[in-house]
Amino acid sequence: MSITIGRAGRQHLSAWAALRAELWPDEGAEQHRDELADVLSAGSDRDFACVALTAEGVCVGFAEAALRTDYVNGCETSPVVFLEGIFVAEPHRRSGIARRLCRAVEDWGRARGCSEFASDAAIDNAGSLALHRALGFVETERVVYFRKAVGATGA
Image (cartoon, rainbow, N blue to C red; front, side):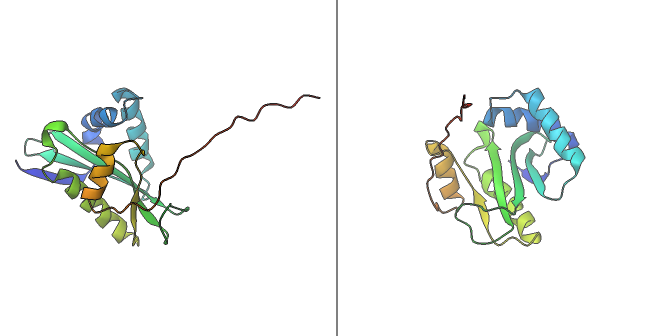
């Protein structure tokens, strides 16, 4: 099957949002579509998204990235190109699409002066951890975040 990788645009919004809702189901496709429309309207050079399209123009995957200038765990340089999310529809997995999406992200980051490409995954997401390793990412550390509510003090 012929797949092309290209920069995501307004013409991809509905399909891209539907795939995003599969990756991040806490929000529906309509909420994702609104968020993506806002991102595209902002036109920031600090964000990048690409899509994988079949010869028929069907969107079967996406990758989103950002330039991060704050501290990125495990990295030594700044800016860092950071993979915010990647998803390939089930029937198209294990065909090299994720690798090609990541290559597009990496090329975009390199063109902006990045020498490191970072990402993260939930510690219990075995599929994501395996994908990152298969794509050449090296685990740098494991972190557990904590939170404590600060209550009001009374007199």
